[in-house]
Image (cartoon, rainbow, N blue to C red; front, side, top):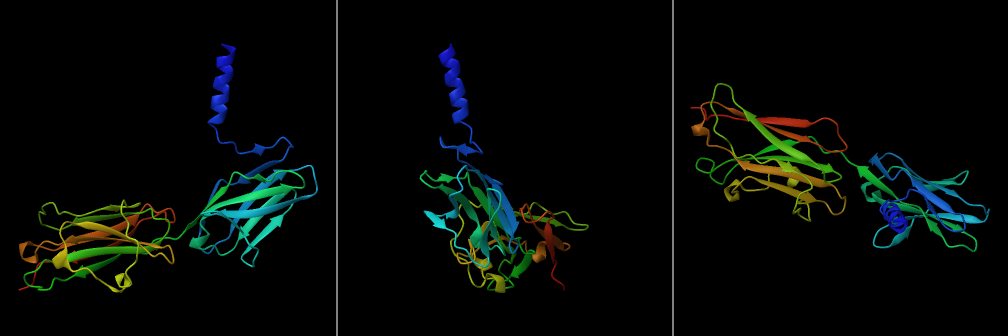
Length: 266
């Protein structure tokens, strides 16, 4: 029974992620905070606390990519050490600064010890949504489409929703599409024409769709939703469509914009 109790204690201890690590020589290293979110352009400070008995030690900071990458000292990235605490300061953070950072403490004639790591998340807020009206090849017989676009955000976590209303008219259910990121199959490249206006032909649209595109250079994400509009001739009055962007960690309030699709005038 005593062996079983001892085994249970060991299993519980193994399942926990310790915030403080120790070596037989007494070196202990921990990092705070475990995760840090900073708006793009602000300053991030990552701290590494350690306890060593020897005065002969050194601290290095690394960023983990495919392999550990030493953080070089520069005017934008520098290290401040005081009272066995090493702080990595990154000024004017960019999206490329996002990632996992580790400190390594080296004591003379002892194995180096690593901290538990800090994840730096650089936030970029989404732009205010914009609605574009897309015309078919033949404006008289083709079907028009509506597109809502937002972009420039990071990370790729966002919700885009459509709502509609009409005064004094009964509207049948319209097949709108709400988009939620992360998307299951994001596109790899960003079209240079997206921010200049509509680029999709409504003649080639089928069911309502969501699209996510990512600029591989800036790491910014863009999201847009497209759906086909009802024929104007079938409407007794105009319909106001509202596109809302929300649920991004860089914003606390939703962003909205509206467009009214009305009956053709005689």
